[in-house]
Image (cartoon, rainbow, N blue to C red; front, side, top):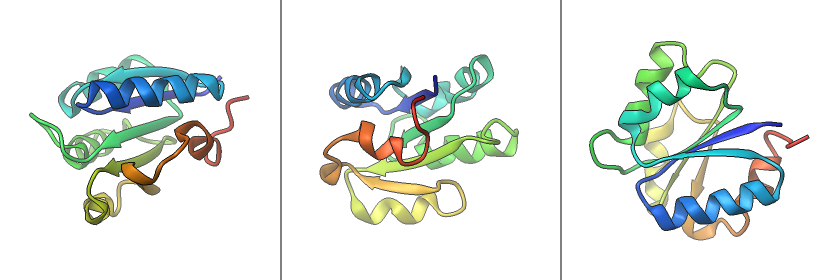
Length: 118
């Protein structure tokens, strides 16, 4: 089973995405900020990292750049997301896609395009 790491400071959204991803057959782990991401990436093998842009302590792009520099994102699908559609530019060279949160209807179906659950 593919594992998805959700990194977002919005608890309601993490819960909503987690429910949808589990329903699609993914194993899901959630964290609330980019600062914790490196230690979590070291402890488990994730297929997909779904990461918010704007978070306290460490932004998603900053956290991903740091993890990328340490080889922690090799062979992982990184998808940036934000409430602001203009934030896609911060994910250049890091993420393979960018989701504008207000347009994502079923995150499980979106992630299935990249990492089938079975």
